[in-house]
Image (cartoon, rainbow, N blue to C red; front, side, top):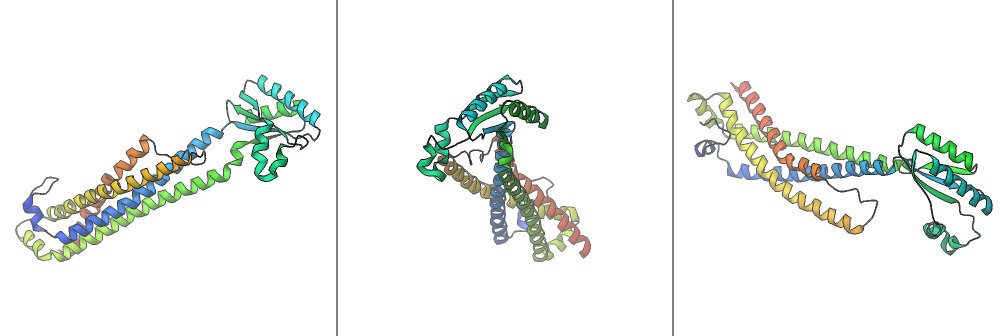
Length: 297
């Protein structure tokens, strides 16, 4: 009986069970397929949430809502001058009225382009920092220059989206943990079934002087290799599915899904999953077999 990590042909023949091996391999392929999909979803939503935070941190929208057009125009100009004087402001740009009318067209129709329609003047502002103190100073300066100004943090608009992304990330992480637990449970059941099937062979091995650790090594090698091969198969299919979905999202050319992409670090994490599950299966098989042998003997 060899002591290396890879079993010899003689060791493999001791517990030969080709049908069980095939079943175990395909079960692990399915497990890893689902796990990789869940992990890809979690990593993509986590990256999208981080990108959203970076894009919206320190961004403000200033609305001048004075009803009279002359007052609105004057206050908008004063607010713009005040903003550009502040060192905390990196950029302050007025939003074109034609662009606002186009944005309002789905709700107002052609009336959105009516010059008599009192559309608020708007200014997009990028701050050097999104800290509350910075926002308060900028808000105070704008309201001094334009009393009718209303300041909104773009970050607050997207808070519900950020919450949904956090929920999806947590759900994906929970699914990965559940799949890992299910994999360990399947391994334990397979190891115990193997002990029952090969009870006579194991008894002979013990009479020949084999220890429980040596017997357990036979099972853990078989299960570890099956898990690794099945995991690589499942991951290959899952990567193809993820790549196809990514191509479809990129074809949409939408800002809402632009952040749902996987970076180099994300792909590296996914690539480690088959090996991590193989290690988990090996340890689970070893502990399960040793515990069962101690109870029997």
